[in-house]
Every structure is written in C-alpha cells, then in structure tokens.
Image (cartoon, rainbow, N blue to C red; front, side):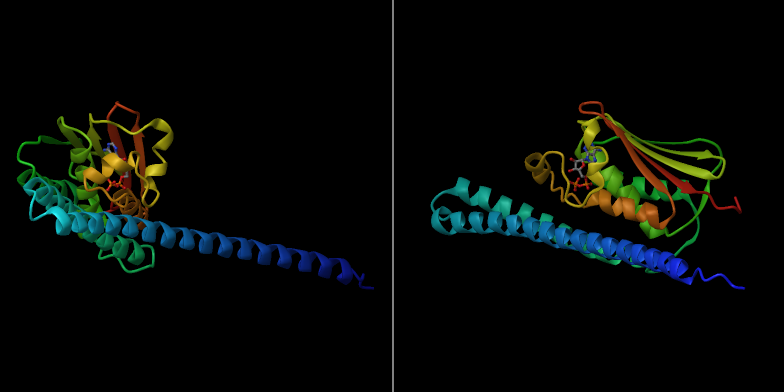
Length: 256
Ligand code: ADP
C-alpha cells in the first residue's frame, strides 16, 4: 500500500513555494526601492547644480555689468558647475549601461603596459605631480577590456590627485593567480567608518569641499562596477589624515 502523505507533502511543497515566492517579492521590492532611491538622488544632485547655476546667472544679470568681481565669480562658478554636471551625466549613462550584461571587449592585455600608457596621459595633465609606478615579478597578463581598465586607473589616480598633494604610488603585484593593483596617496584620507560607504552612488565624505574639487560621487561606484565585471574585488584602506590605499584584485590570465 502506498501511504497517503500527499496532504502533508503537498502542504510542505506549498509552504516551500510560498517561501520562494515571498523571497522573490522581497528581492523585487528591494531592487525597486534601490532604483527609486537612485532616481531621487540623481534628481537631487542635478537640481542642486541647476539651482547654483541659476543663482549665479541671476547675479550676473543684475550686477554683472557694474561689478567686475561679481562678473568673474559668476562666470567661473557657472563654468565649473556646468563642467561638473556634464561629467555627472556622462557618469550616470555609464552606470546605467554597466551591469546590464553588455559584453566587455576582453583581450589578453599587459597590465603594466596599460599602467604606463595611463601614467603618460595623467602626467601630461598634471605636470607638477609625481606618480611612481612599481611592479613586482614579471609583467602580468589579464583577460580584460583595456578601455575599462584604463578608465578604472584614471578614476583612482584622479581621486589620489584630488585628495592629496604629495607623491602617489601605483603598484602592480602578482600573487599566484591574482594580480593586485594598489593606488596609494598620503592625502586627507577617508574616516575608517566611511571606507565602505564611498562606493555608494553620490556618497561624498565632505559634500561642500568635494563640490569644489569637481567631484560627483560617482567615480568609485563606476570603479567598483568595472572591477566586478572583471570578477575582481576592490577595497579601501584609509583613515582620516592617514592617506588612502585602494587595492584591486583581479584574476590573472591562465596563459601567463
Ligand atoms: P568624487 O567624484 O566625489 O571624487 P568618488 O566616487 O570617486 O567621487 O569618491 C567618493 C568620495 O570618496 C569622494 O567625494 C571623497 O570624499 C572620497 N575619496 C575618494 N578617493 C579618495 C582619496 N584618494 N582620498 C580621500 N578621499 C577620497
């Protein structure tokens, strides 16, 4: 005889299905809430920028013809804020397209070569700054999208340049199957309890000061999405006044 566990089994199955369904709903709600938060943060950021531009344009219209100092201040601020807004909209588009499974253009690439190319560009733009490149072991090969890795290095070097005044160290190390990229500066640092928060969109340690540097709070979220797309990890070691070290770990190509 077959036992008739069906009532109990069906109940169990039903219970499991309900649980799975509820978990799916929770996840959907969570992702919807995140999406809403993102739209609201982006609108707030763009709105603040427009309010500043509008304020200075108004000042220029009312007093700009009579007062040369007001004229200069207004024009400078309108220019800086517009530039920042352009960068922000470009970065928003970048973030919108990342994580959507758009295919990376991956090829075997020499990471040190890529670092040298980026450094030559950055040092042309910042002639008065020193950036040291050091490598340990032989030149590691990554299977990666060179444009994305260049963009990643540019974001990290740009931050190191913005938030420090001294020499910056860029190093490439190879540990077994992992390639590490370290970008280290001796600048203002990030308070320890905020080192994870800076990867969130629009997060800035000091809103007012960072606005002056042309910061948008979108650089590190983009850096993180590039690293994740390449199956790597990104971590920040820092403290207020202690300088900042960003450590990226990426899988090395097995052909190396
Ligand atoms: P931003 O465009 O504002 O620099 P990011 O997303 O790149 O945006 O960085 C977020 C925030 O993290 C910055 O506003 C700054 O407060 C902090 N930060 C990032 N890199 C550094 C660094 N090297 N030194 C000190 N603070 C940093």
